[in-house]
Image (tube, rainbow, N blue to C red):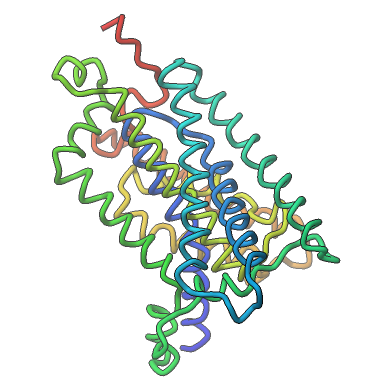
Length: 333
């Protein structure tokens, strides 16, 4: 039971960055914007938080002078600011200038990874580290701190209460996003913009404002996924290119959840569990290294299966927004 509880807790920890990334991308896609720059935005969110934490720790006169509020607030605000700027750049290019969304998203991803590697490498040199990584354990400790009584509750505490605050924020944000999309006028307007912006515009809805707001907010939520990975899951250790393909998995998760953030909560933990199986050699490989690489394809295979099933059933509520990836030209209305 304890081994199973430990595995489930690791699956949740793996799934939280995916949950934040997929929630942010779902909000973005509901507005009709297809942001393939999510991997780069998550990368920028992570490195922005690292920069904020590094500058804060360097400003301290002694390690004992660190305080909880600035140790959390500075990396958090840095992460949100960096992610917001990336979302703003994407919106300016695709909404205002009407650039191709696919090309812009891929460019954002390439830029974000390069941005993170450049500043990550610079911080590693500034810190004088002898290895290709930088460790911010003091700041990370506040992000990783769990409820004090979790260890006394056995498997229940391990599975449900052994996480840092960002894990619970991720779940709350996903459920709140689902409620807004389904139950509020703002959500109705956002879905209308994503389905048919010309009709929404004719009804008096500011299409560009909704696209900007949804995309920038979605980018900030996705950026938190990068911050969580560095500060919580990786215990404050930043090394270039360590984030892997989690950003792409977050985009795949959007399709797997058929654009519903509430389903994404459990689906992200499922993805996290499959990811754990593939990277920790739990599944049999027969001594063949290539088999391990095939196991890494499992989340994408699952996504393809869901995509095929939803296409066959052809239910409107399970399809992507009708105008997804298509620039809106008001002059053609």
